[in-house]
Image (cartoon, rainbow, N blue to C red; front, side, top):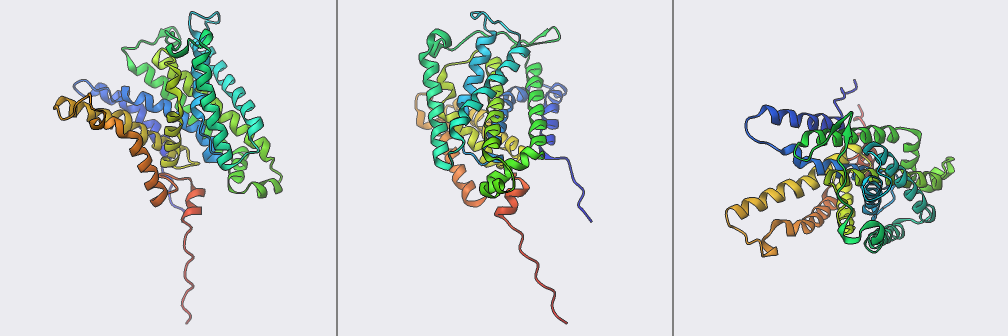
Length: 352
């Protein structure tokens, strides 16, 4: 008799996240947990874009921060008053996604024949090139100053305000829910099965009639489009692109950590990885630092005593532990779990 299936984790995540602001309004006192979750929602979108490349298709991309930067600066140029376009939030967001799709397509053209470490090095170099171009093309990107201020989004005449976080929160959660739905449908579609077959055995998938180059190029384009969307929402949320250094290699490392820790190839695993990695960074470490400073247990001028200074060492340590004890991640996909932990064959019944 088949086991009853419960609600998948990704929809449980969305449902619980949607209830958090409502619960905060019902509880006495001031609570802003939802405000702290906004960066986590944006980084989860970035992780979903990387999951298409690394989780579904098996392509190690170390330059997703560059796609995020392309999205942030494209959105800023399209909306900021100092440029002639001055598009609205929704139109600029759509155009930004198309820009990310195009950039991913043209990056994929010369790189889809590369594998493993070679592909990782090329995408790493692409990320460094984008960061340097944004710094030096100051006549357009304003260099290290970043592009600001950016207009706040509006929805049916309602203009979002920085002091009220709930509309921003549900806007980001709505985009995340759409990406979750899109990625789940892709995963179970013919395209998703082709990506997974390429990840498992590219030669066998090509023998079965799949065009690996075409499928890889599609994965590059769709993954870059989602990362660009995350960048656009990040810039809109901050009201500025920030300096180009905000989209450096460390952002790509955090995205890779989210996918690996959560579970490669699983949409719910990426959401869990974003909650664990970014929640540890923006909630646990920040809260611990404020607590220690309030009780004068650390000196703010000493970087060695600040918990935030050790976060990347802790990320690396977490990856080592995951690769050693649970390489499939905290919430792996069924295929990856079956590969790494195959069920032992049942013993034959004893003879009479």
